[in-house]
Image 1 (tube, rainbow, N blue to C red):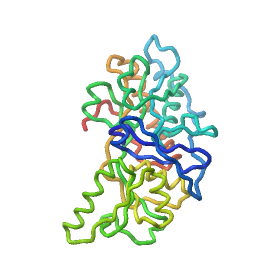
Image 2 (cartoon, rainbow, N blue to C red):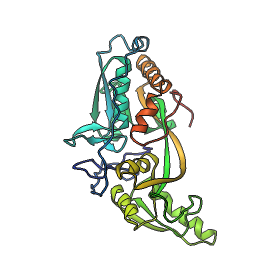
Image 3 (cartoon, rainbow, N blue to C red):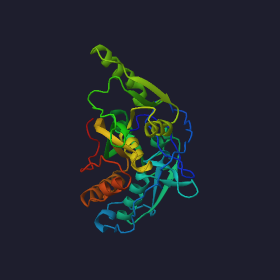
Image 4 (cartoon, one colour):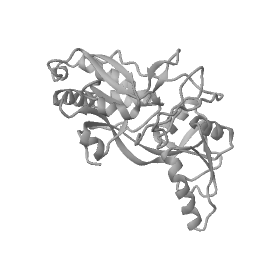
Length: 306
């Protein structure tokens, strides 16, 4: 759920890898990494069984050079980050998606890391498309075409088994952890104020510079609840080996989209058809499932109203 550029945590030497949607990383700030017991190896989806669909590939521009160049900001686990054994390999479900689209189109895929704010202006010149957890909004649709593929929002997470028996509809009096600079950091004070206005105990808010620290303190029992982007919270369950679980449903969900140049309708049509094919075949849902994330859309709608 990238409204603006995002902080990241990189998976290096077994570190707990998580990130959050922020308003604080306009300049591309890097996160710290934190190691936690019980982490698991980063997942991935095997794209090798995906076959080229000739009628979709035929939609590509006549001058397409055979390589799909994707602009991405590899600073938002689990969607896109530097991972792999060397900590330098483009990794994440958006990266898996880019490769899957390439398979359908019979194209090579090149994922290019760039500053988040620089990607959209470079689409159509430097990149064929941008896949970087772009939230769809009217301002972006004025600049590029956007193909909807994912719905993401916010979630609460607790220690596995919900030992405190917490109700997501009433978290007054709990200790809640958020990463500084995130959307959740901006909204959590309002949640606490609502509690006070209802005559209940306020939420005790603990802010951390790293999302990994938030997750670690849920596991350790220092905080009762973690409040984060839905992919981040869901991925925490994967990375902690099931020591964290989602509490309640995703809230404030909004669509994300693949960005394509407005003056390249053939590329847009090819990517939209390829995305719809992955949806229809259940492949896109399987990609997200490999990462422990929900929110796969069923229709690759072009420029949806939001």
